[in-house]
Image (cartoon, rainbow, N blue to C red; front, side, top):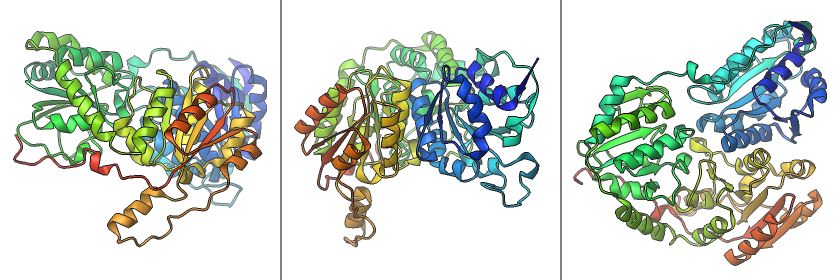
Length: 545
């Protein structure tokens, strides 16, 4: 037991759980906490941004690329609301972000008196983007509330949590007992039902054409996933958010284009941590397909309910299935040749989409195998769902079902901070880039060597294409006026490179990766061909067998 301020108890507690970086934007309600953080700068790096949205996206990129908890720190009310898009993205992608938010003075919380940054029911305002919220009202209860926060961050769906503290509480001194940190969270996890594991193993082992479908909920279970897939020779069909769970150079690591080709013959599906988002939710369940679902909650509202529901973490469940599969598994020949042929055909098909495929191949070739790409919601982003080979779980960071325009640049900054020894590239369009263009200043100030590839067509390209194809070319609110991005880069103090071809992009990326600071590459492009014609969006026909 020691005397300390609540802000000190907060700082000591998060340090115990390995927080070494905070993405933050200061303000008066946080002054007491920042004053304490001043004395901990040897252990906790403060990356301060120019907009709260970037704090959450950077925390998301940090967490998604490292597997550790990402942390952002914002003022209450408008600061927290500004961070909302990043928290929503992390929530959609099952990524652990600790959002620390200030509050108004404790005696006025939820009183509606009109104090600076007051927001009624602040936890409720972000309940849809967080899985849990807690407030410490005294120094003494701070370690316990944060312990609960880290249990939530490391168990079940690893989604954002909100921890809030009032400014007067931060300054308050009291008796504090710092709790020993939890080093093994498995005791707080649900154990898979062994009887259900046995049933599922028998179903998979006796299947003629089993397949595994994965989403972002599979991360952390890659070793067990591959072991099971190899045991039963099941292709692993990865969603946009599940890419890299199996190295796509492995014959079992497949995308959804191959998934559709295999769909009619699959008899048993193992779904791991996936919501079956588009395009998979457009494929009909024909025939007598059996579905086994592994997830941390039963998802009772899904239209396709499983034959076997294993409600438990992916890692424990897949390991349990692997241990049992050999007892039931029929003798299986390797499907390497068959699946590699399908993979090559899918690659050839998506590579017809130009210039996206030409630019995408350059990015893949220049980015090291252990590098990280953050694809924005652009035509290049759609290409990356199916055409960008991903070699490891953090190799292709996506925004999940939120599809948040503007996420890729600040997310890439966070990924680069979390992986200083790896090459990271953010791929964005001109529309999305301007959402967080001010964070060029953050990149320069903190010397974050992110390479940003900006495809500039001076329009919200997806909106304009829809208006062309679906609304008889009735264009409205889609064309953009942009700054001179090279002059903009120069004014922020970073290198800017402008190209207009895949060959030019290759040289620019090679030059950019040789630098030790941030680089902005502008790629001038015109309207790009729609990729939808090449994608697995059709519904499987009922009469297909």
